[in-house]
Image 1: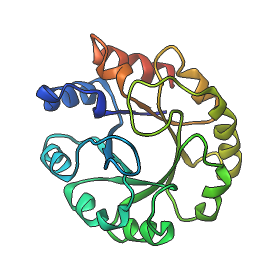
Image 2 (image 1 turned 180 degrees about the vertical axis):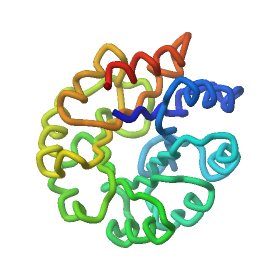
Image 3 (image 1 turned 45 degrees about the vertical axis):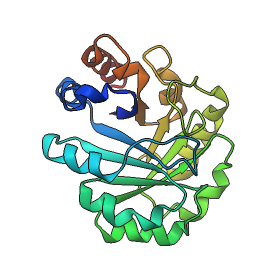
Image 4 (image 1 turned 60 degrees about the horizontal axis):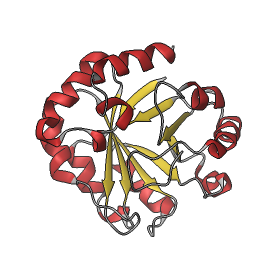
Length: 213
């Protein structure tokens, strides 16, 4: 299991300290949610935040673009220090073109699906993407409850993409329900509020990593 704490839930007044804390505790990725207020009804942060954080962390920067036209910004996010760039199937960009653009900058490409997007929509890109992100809440807001109906999609995706492919899940995951997506076949776990909303984020990271062994 790879654990990707989401900085959307972190204390932005001490963001660098928060990231260092989870990195030292054993986190694998840093999940960075970029929202444009169009694809999702919320705004977050963009390229300057990633660029400023990059020199201070060795974590894999797992950048989740919840934006309507991601193809316009791939170069910016790649040069800012993103390692994985994930776009939404629901975006307005040409998916295949955007995946190629991500790879052209030497980055891994992910494809995200909201809970109501059929898995079949991702199948044409099976040989092109490096990771599939299955949202276990609807993209756009932190703190939502895990949607158990996504479990069957996770199981089906694992069957279709094979045992060694990265299947990421994002939304409503904590120590109490971590075994649910893991049992369904996910191997990359995003956790925001569960980690950064805890009194001791490092202890939560260590506990989740232990459960994922």
